[in-house]
Length: 531
Image 1 (cartoon, helix red, strand yellow):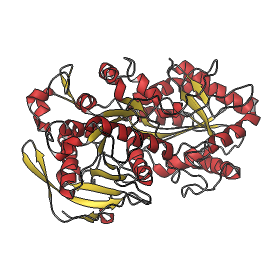
Image 2 (image 1 turned 180 degrees about the horizontal axis):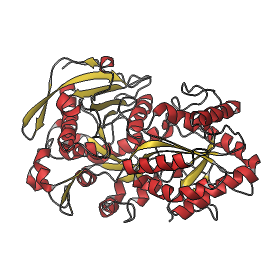
Image 3 (image 1 turned 90 degrees about the vertical axis):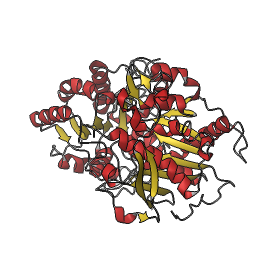
Image 4 (image 1 turned 135 degrees about the vertical axis):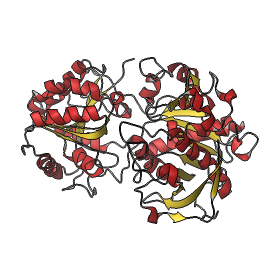
């Protein structure tokens, strides 16, 4: 197989840190949630820091295959039944020189859905993503490019660190450090124990320190034990998942490996989410001139078939419809919210029952509530720019929102602690009362939010530190040329916003648009965990 060499970028250290990113999604080609957004943005930021970073993913139906160059040769991938074969196509992340290698296997990936028709999953997903995980490692050998660090994401690639620690023993890849990132702990790759053979690993791996988990086969558990370092999407979440309330049954394992678990807040693609240049918006604006914000709001109201009223606050919820996102809590608070003088826009996809519920409620309150399904990326941009408040119950946003100070008008959003309908409703009510009773505080909150930098630059630097530490941990020595080797463990990324008495905990943030990094001047309503 032949491929053009990938440049480490201008000013790259010699040698460059070689990083392989393995994932089942990558924006803009395959995205069902935050995972795809991360894989579409983080490697570009790593490349700018001088890393020789490459991405391995499947070639799905619906992707623009003509944009990917077929490489010579066939990749042979060991599977439980023998060898499976794949073609490899090479593309680049848009706006960058980051190589993306797509494994082409029609039986596994040339299908209408990434994982299966929602809410169902394809019955052979374990085999499909076993092929991706094993195939990504075989790809590096075919390229003659052995990574220093292999970064796997979520259960679909949880077998990667396990293979590096087992079938690659005493081989070149065994020296690669492995980093495993948890994006959604609710999905762990749980199968019947009888499916162990599909992984190609012997039954001896079905034990309490690898795959066995309360009588099931659990891919994520094996990755947690086998990876050199672990990360998740925020410092708060890293602490939460070590407790029974949020650990989804793996809190004990995560607490045991807490020394190598670190929360790094997801960044935002500052090019894609910049309201001054966003191609999806009917008007442009920035922190210095918010006049286009009003035009975006009016356009959103028209698109949602809501009365065009500049005086009423527009609340927005853009999410995957799943209980771990707090959608069930939001649904129970919905009637209370709709009793106020507000407009509400919901966009997402996921649980069909949730879609039906929100659709029915929107029909009953068509003068103030619009629900759109399925998810549409362009519409998400217009909602971000046009809404006044953006509601979020879970995730890394809580690590980036400074709580509103009613006395001074300071802060960038409204934070609450308890994930229940009463707390969510109270905090949204607080945001709405601020809109009507203290309107002079809204625009300054928007401008402060737009001036903050939550781009991938900072988060990528933290990942590079983590990679260097993982390399040293794996090899027993520092990466050549590294001036220092930071510890794998570390405090949560970024300062924790000060709590404000009576805040509750989850978040609404004042919404505008994004400048450097989703600087959408929309105050956020976000939950912050207690403790």
